Image (cartoon, rainbow, N blue to C red; front, top):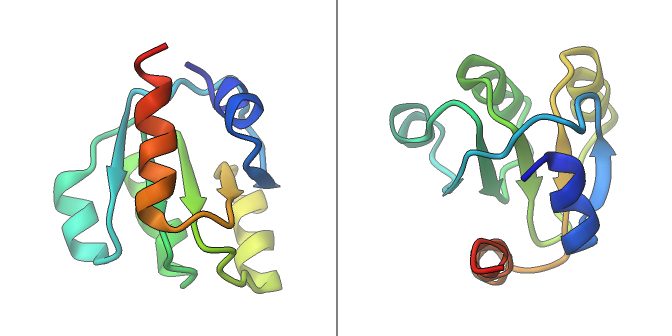
Length: 110
């Protein structure tokens, strides 16, 4: 599924959407950046509550499909502008991480 289809099916808020046709090829949930770097794979969707600028560095390094920030975590202007300038798809949801994982998981059963 594309990031655009994911966005439409979940209703997640768009923060940065530079490549809506990028394919989501898996999913990873976690908040420890070094762990994500070692475990997530290219094309994954990453669910996190982290809003540190380093999230974008990891997303770029791994060429992730998108980052989904959970629990309506606050994103500062630097984060948003950096995501846009680096063409990183970022979505946000008010759902807790676990519930967001369930929503994504249920999409794979469709």
